[in-house]
Length: 124
Image (cartoon, rainbow, N blue to C red; front, side, top):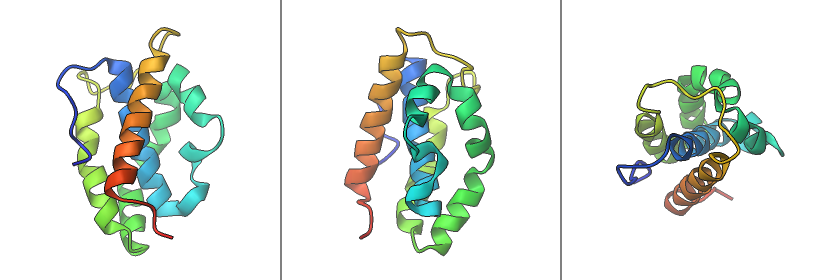
């Protein structure tokens, strides 16, 4: 399932997984032209996650509804349900990550994106 994760991971890793899940919901709702999927955005979000995730997190239910309207509910529903697993323990997304934390962000993002793609391959 998309929410499976070992119990202990760094905040940066969890942020990367959150980013991947939100980006997947955006993609399912808006196709390939979604904001978090644009070139360079993931790199910027690795440095400053909260500013890049603030608006997408506010719109998360809208993305779920739009994905369902587009016939993507089977893929969107489990991704939506997984979001709480990736929120930082304090439930606040960090404003910034230092240079040493950014590889954990990218690893979390890549692993979660691969898991979502494996469980729900993009429709052609």
